[in-house]
Image 1 (cartoon, one colour):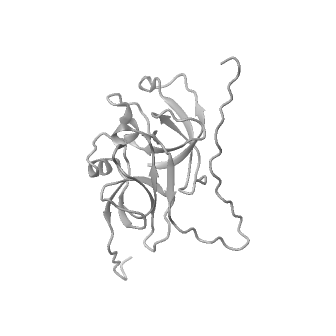
Image 2 (tube, chains in turn red, purple):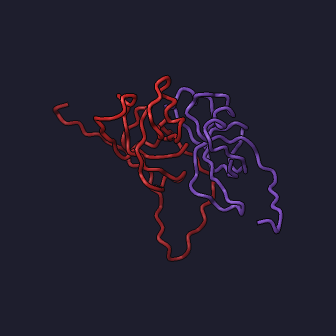
Image 3 (tube, helix red, strand yellow):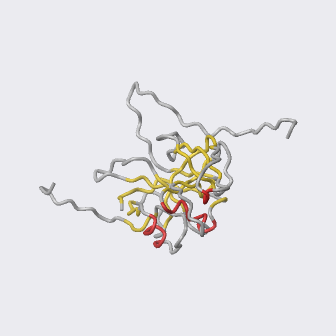
Length: 117
Length: 93
């Protein structure tokens, strides 16, 4: 499984019939220090995760197991929403002059509701 | 399977029902010289490992699922053993 942050969602009207009703989210993989790593990807969602939330997702055939007995053609699925990450490792001091980005905690997500809602 | 070191723990309340009761660990795969190999991953714990331990990491679904006795569970990584010692034979490439 891998850590990630939900950064968006994907709409798909025409898709495999087994995937009907699957939410699909854009996920940015994260390091344990919650900095971005690698490229964003699309994961189906079984937990009801929302934008900005830190999740863990599974890759491979196992990604379709939450949908059993259906076997949709999926290879990445969010299977949990992370409450807390507890990291205990020393991070090597960066070389002098290197660009250092200090990891920032995830910004809280405020969903604005319009009056039409 | 990979050599890895446990660097942290993770808690999740909302998760797949089959993950309940399993410990989730943040595991950093390692090269033979002890340097980091790629990014850290999340793995379930099958041997009661803790932070700082050097462990054996199964990175395939079937072996990971069976190691924790949860078939048909969405699990693709598991810590399945502790590494005491690694010996490399010199001169064999």
